Image (tube, rainbow, N blue to C red; front, side, top):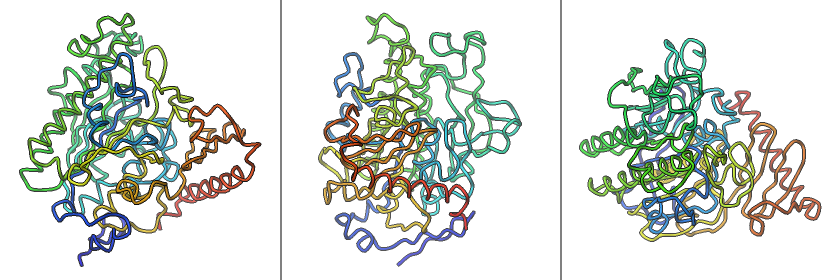
Length: 474
């Protein structure tokens, strides 16, 4: 039996146990070649549940995502951990709700050094780690003005990805235009109106040495991100090393701009905001297809877990006409439209046939699922995600525990059938199995269900408050 060494910044031990004993009750044995699969986390920014062609969108063209829907695992009830981007991103790499470590909203707080990230854990076990795209979990420079908070004004929030386990980086603090990312776009695309179109936007890309990237930054932003991610993957394959790659696109977050190639399919659409929105989603879809094709050409697709989701629901306004497919609410809301997002897992070496997972899953599930696959056991600090392998293998069709959400004056508790919603002190209960649009409040007619879920939510909130006070950092 082998044991992991401690992660350097805390006395945190992850025990590597034999795969059979770790997963005997959860999944069939994994072939030796797949015991350390490559792992890729792809995430889009503000892509709505209905912003995919395969769900019947009348305009969008998303051939790569459509193919994933046909050939991979598709999650029909996958949730971002928060209705805005920064908190969700933290949940992806810690397995924990962001209220536990102080990232309560966008441009709020930072990833604390006491938290354990997937990059730190996997690097300890021989993985090469890379972050490409939007970080949004802290500032990236202490010296010059950058993005929303970067520079001397917010030194206390300096927390770049290279200080949280990532070996290679091509990262921004926050949003950029989705085409020519270093240049201010016209006001209709989301420019502020305070800067001349074409002038510096004010957000930089940074590498793992803390250096500002200045070359080859023109054109489609999703392609620029993939241009950096693919060489990292190729170098890992040449070195015969497993890799953990985070690819967090900026699209389709405002400012939304598409280039001529991706505008062409939408020439008949009148509103420029709409054609650019659809064009930038088609552009990012193209990069997902490019990634999948390259993994196959390199011969590593079989042993690669490729996860895909959005960080929250769509803006759903005229400048960014994202769709929720009729779900209630949008970005910033804890109703379904604000947190239910398109999501997939492709792992051909383990799951050869397409399937649909109907049970609720969440971005916090990445951490415990990946650790379980690797036979790793985390310490005893609370996690909000679960190991999804029993769901993925068909051992069970139900989620083993509820999912808690908090954001501003909202809180929810989600289970397989029911969802409890507290908004401005009003308590609502919905049966999502029969009412996916959350129209019929059944709180008064189902008092026992309401009481049970209120107790679960209250206990979970108490646990989050304890974590936020530092109880997990002993």
